[in-house]
Length: 256
Length: 280
Image 1 (cartoon, rainbow over the protein chains, first blue to last red):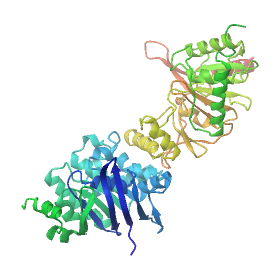
Image 2: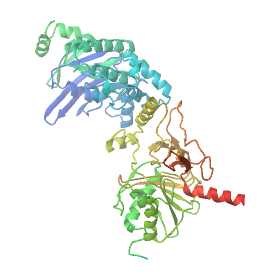
Image 3: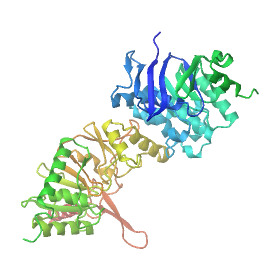
């Protein structure tokens, strides 16, 4: 099986400071990769480089498109990159305000990607939007409300619906449960896990919360000071950490 | 004549504006930046249209100015007088006699011909402006044909009002490429934009010129199940009796009395005199 996404020696510097350095990874179809590490370890930098929101200084990123050809995403033209980010890719921000249009109704938010790829039938857009709101547990009678009237957890679920509506094949998530209280977090994780399984999604999830990756990720990469210090199957890394930093990370979590 | 150069602007400036116009005609619907000048009137009074007219007029031209369809409102009169003073050319109220027509908010009811130019005054040339405040972003969106957001606006209209409530400055797609703001004309006028005359749009404050060559395809944006409708008040003109013109609602007394009259005063007058002739 060929990987969906392959990354070779990816490096991003901020002047003399290291953002992330010599990262190599493969992501296979329907696989969820977790990237963990403390604040400033370069995990968000890496994610933004992968998603085309930052330009790395060195390295190569190869993506297998729907048609089966492998493309170097860093050399794609701007329209091709835009098409990719509208169809095959999705990006879930930590703060839903970054990923939503706050002045547009929930239905409009979900419909935007559909309209961007050429959907021109109001009835169909509306039906799809209602279906997706239902999938993320938002009742259909909130479809014409603006996200400003939603709670934080609802906003995050709306952001997920808005991103998944075009059936992407690769989802980038930056701390999707950050800033939510624990019970809301648990429901969101449950929802994400089901969506990922049902749709056969591949995902890269950046988080500092080990519980999130334990629940969602198949494989894990641990980052420290811009380097990948350890990677492997999630249970293996969490239950038998090899690197000193990973051991510290695992032992810092309170056992409830 | 007088101490002004012909049509107020100096020759170099007119040349610069003509270049922008030619570029605009070459790329229909694309907003061409130009070095807009201070004009002897406030922004919002038609400084863009005036500069385009100044660069377009020749001594042989016959000029007409319309404001909301009328030839006799303040804006129309002051611009017409301005050009009479600085060019000495002939002016007219008659749509068919004019070679250059500067307009605000309307397209004349009479069909224009190939030897006419229609100049629009545009307040905000960017159709995406209220959706995306950054100019750098909107330019990129035009370059990449990223117009999904425009449909989000129409979607919001339908979900809130049950129909597309945008009734003026209704966005259009030009030749299947650029989405364009037709200036604040009523959407009733949108279908008329596929016409024989050259159409040039000038936005003075925003420093943009864009244009439509004759017979350019102009399609109003819509949804398959909510098609575009060129709507107007459901009445006939109370003065000339026309049933297919855009109407203004005029309040005539303090008791709530109102009449509907053609907004195009020249067209209405022509209909009245035609009716008079046939009755004699």
